[in-house]
Amino acid sequence: MKKIGVLTSGGDAPGMNAAIRAVVRKAIYHSMDVYGIKYGYQGLIDGHIEEMEIGSVGDIIQRGGTQLYSARCNEFKTDAGQEKALAQLKKHGIEGLIVIGGDGSFRGAQKLADKGFPCIGVPGTIDNDIAGTDFTIGFDTALNTIIDAIDKIRDTATSHERTYVIEVMGRNAGDLALWAGLADGAESILIPEAPDEFDNVLERLKRGHARGKKHSIIILAEGVGSGIEYGQRIEEATNLETRVTVLGHIQRGGSPTAADRVLASRLGAKAVDLLRNGQSGKMVGIQNNQLVEHNITDVVAERNEINHDMYKLANELSI
Ligand code: ADP
Image: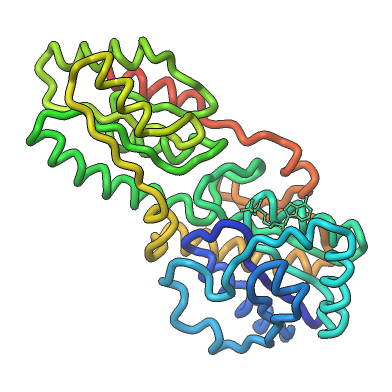
């Protein structure tokens, strides 16, 4: 294989740039040509395709977002859209494609693989919600952004003796909330995978208040419901002054942590190796600090499980 393409798709995540850099440099190291495809599958259909050089990815390893931009593209979900994409790849002489994104993006990559075009997926999403890998690119950075925000909220929460509900990202996945809750000693962690009874949350709050706790932090993944509504319910039920912070898109941005840069570099390079070895329809991942590969069809069919021991521990430590 002499010519490959790379694109980023779906929700962006810090560390995607480090992954692009790794793909480009690793391919050039092996004397391959690399093409950057802008705006995800939309740009592939529309032909936003440019050759990349060693210098094209200089000074981006530390930047959040994605230099190739990302997009959502409904046309690519259709057979006609996929055929247009294949025609563009053929026109540029591209023989293999690396897709950095989440499970939706992988479903798209699998469609091309099913049509005989070699595709490899690299997991990039802050949600850490992809089966077959312990971590996704962007999760560690988003987690640290949340911790930084909660630490600041904690200062003001203590000064005013308030209860705080913090809504974090995670529509179907509670990993950000779970890890943030454990890292920040939250009273309660509400995640889609393990909905806690409202009464338990109240019980914990009241217990803490009775023993003179100055503040309480409740972390809620967005998939559980609205943080604002939850805060109102808490205030009505406890009479404790309750404030809500919805962290929103700050969780997506920022310079990637060292862990994310290293992960992105390893996974991006591994993806190039798989294409060089003639593989297709695979996702690269990391498990027990070893690089692994799994069939995309298996990865998207499986539900990513949270670590239930960690959830139990967080509850034990918040007595
Ligand atoms: P993520 O990759 O972050 O999960 P999305 O679910 O929005 O993000 O998917 C990103 C893009 O991948 C979609 O806009 C679409 O172009 C493509 N895609 C998603 N699902 C499919 C599918 N079943 N078939 C083809 N393409 C898909």
